[in-house]
Image (cartoon, rainbow, N blue to C red; front, side):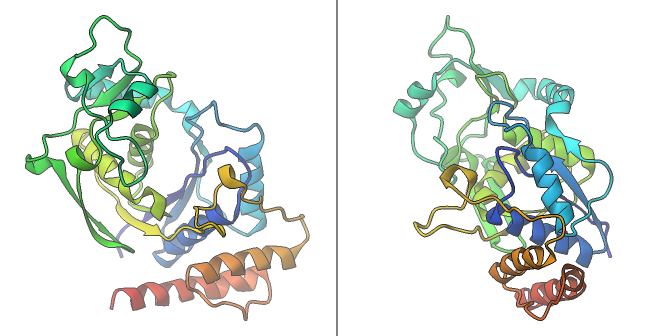
Length: 299
């Protein structure tokens, strides 16, 4: 069996909720099935949106649910020098962007699959000289260039083909507010931790080609990806802290509540484990159930 190193990387913009737990559960079970490691990384690179105490609350809930990670918790906010070094090595592929958010919205050439504005390349051609640079962008290949086409063989979604020039445009490495962008930070973090398998929500599926492009530019290995379905609210929107997702709150001794939360997340992933009588029992039967589930999907 090949080496497996996975991770769960929640953003501490609020407490853990049911949607995030689905991702954590899938990643944890996948690591256990492959007899691998599972790391916990706090993605707090966006310090403006970080809520004090949220990371600690997320950690406490994971522990209460019986999810144990390997090694120490990694904090993105403490890895800025790594992002700086990576960005410096991309200097020949990057350029300063002077556009405001409104200007980008007004001149965009479309909307990417993940909802981001497709940048028209204004500053790539230095059409607004004399203004202070607000961000740093990476230049993607021309639409007809073979390097513009990224093919992702996702373990859940199957083969996904993505043209960076048409469906993304030049994307941000460092934001106008001075913080490093998610796309760069996650690529550097995964490489530094030796991540071989990424399990996360399908809402990030179309961010992955951008990350694969950066991995190629930085000479990093590309992990295997598995994007699980995202939990949605009654309006069909992704369940998130922004649209009122209720936090998971479990008292220290409430085993029944902890088990109920795990069973609900497992059921959403397609695992029927209602015979579980305790949290400990849940984990004993969940790992082989996930193994069987994956085998059935690949037949």
